[in-house]
Amino acid sequence: MFSPVILGQVLINGISLSAIYILVSLGFTLLFGIMRVVNFAHGSLAMLGGYALFFLYTQYHVPYAIAVPLAALVVATLSLVLERMVYRWFYQKMFQSMIGLIGLDMALYSTAAIIWGPNERSIPSPVSGIYHLGPLFLSSSKLVIIFTAAATLLAFFAFTHLTRQGLAMRAAAQDVETAELQGIHTDRIYILAFFIAIFMAALAGGLYAQNYTLSPFMGERPLMMAFVAVILGGMGSIPGVALGGIILGMTESFVGTYFGSTTSTFVTFGAVILILIVRPWGLLGTPEAS
Amino acid sequence: MAVVEEFAPPAPTAADPASALRMKAVLGALLALCFLVLPLLRPGEFILSLATTLLITAIATTSLHLIVRLGSVSLAHGAFMGLGSYAAVLSAMKLGLPFPLALIVSFLVPAALGLAVGPVLLRLSGKYFVLVTFLMGEIIRLIFVSWQSLTGGSNGIFGIPYPYKAFASHTVFYYFTFVLAALCIGLVARVLQSEIGRTMDAIREDSRLAQCSGIPVLRTKVAIFTLSCGLVGISGALFAYFVRYIDPTSFSITQSLNFVVMNVVGGMYQLAGPIVGTVFFVILPEFLRGYVDFQRIIFGICLVVVMAALPGGIVGLIARLRLLSNKVMGENP
Image 1 (cartoon, rainbow over the protein chains, first blue to last red):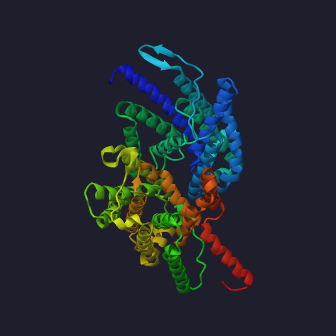
Image 2: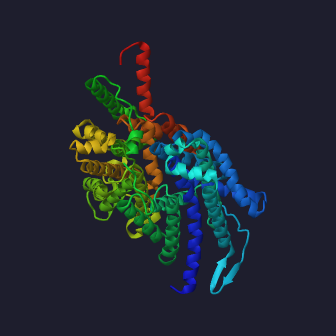
Image 3: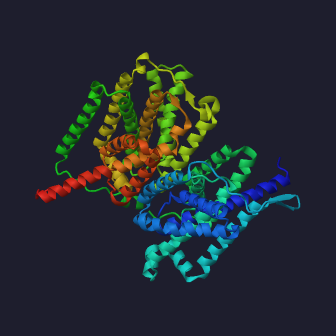
């Protein structure tokens, strides 16, 4: 049961799950860290990313390598309308944003259910086939996911650490008022951060939909996982999200494979509740001055 | 604490608290009277079951209101309602308890869980409390789904027998629900009107200041949370005996969210809020029958608009309009 081959397989699955979770929760934590918005609509925006990929890739036959980033780009661009109409009301208002965005979430998935129907669809994988790496079987669709997520995360890291805009964004994430005092246009940073966050969520949604299934209600699980990853790592902390996502993806893969998915949900949620009680600010977060 | 300042309610509008209280009591009595005479008008089964649903939901939303008044929002309330449902039905069907005892069990089981987890959960500040209750609700629902030998898993429990033959009559069950709802909501109103109610307001406004003033903050919070969980359990038991079928989907996060929506859209700062919200959201869907698919979109948009522009909800809007008309009339409010 614990043979190295299976363990290796579980490890690969864990990495691809972690990659998706990190993408979703990175955007979530960005919105929280900079705008103090608890984005309950994150899962629905990921779902829109899934549909965008579905239409671009399966209906309009855009080549896969273009369709994936293009789908996320389309969703992120269109969501700027939502930023203007909805999110802007809730910046720096944590409590209101939480409840209001639950409403946005409901409105989004219900609209999707009306337009595209409630039934599940699937996005075919662009590559099929399995590579042998020693005793390991690497399914190429998993590799695509890992590669895409890794590339995005690298790009995000490069952007935040090598450009002036990225620096400004990190400054705003640390302390909005002080950043403003330094001459940073926080309203521009808000839009930029929003765009990046939704881009990553939509990208993850596409990958998730391709790996599992596409439906208007598929956003719930990524949203929940984003919560959990973000709480684990510490709300607003970017390295924390990476850690949280990895712990979560690996736990789900290991416990899910050996003990079933219900047990894995119990274990992860239970662990998160415990962590919250002992260390509410998460593993890598900092306690709030209250 | 950041949550508190965002949560600041509008200043009380009534100059004379005694007359405001009398006004509220009169309004409440009028509402109760409407419900009391409703069956005499021979409204037909549809209206009657709609009114029964309304009363059952009102128990749940007013019980959630207790937590909201403490400055938190629980997303596990649907799950606690389910706990009450399953506790009542299982204790009646498997243990053979008589119905009144089963009702008491439906209060005690969720209240006991609330008492057990309360001291830990209520230490958490705003957002963490919301997230943990969200996860806890999901865990409870998963237990309903996976404990198949006891709960019937996803199939649920069907064919719940009438505890008394008389309950087969819609009117009788309606009056039974009415009495329980009046008791539960009356209890909530009494709590809010008492010393404890003012203590709760103090805790919501500034829990540290309250602590310094000698209020046992955590103990009050836990007591209120426990009471709230128990009351929602009763609404769960009523729901089970009304529909005579329960399954885990009735107690998912969607249900918890419905209660939150009703509280928020109705108004978070007064007991009238959840009642208005319940009436609004139980009756509104019936007018939108042809547009069932659009219901949740409308719910969602309502939530966004209320949170963005009307933090006091419908009740707050009415109060504001009254204040405005007073000003226009030249009266000194």
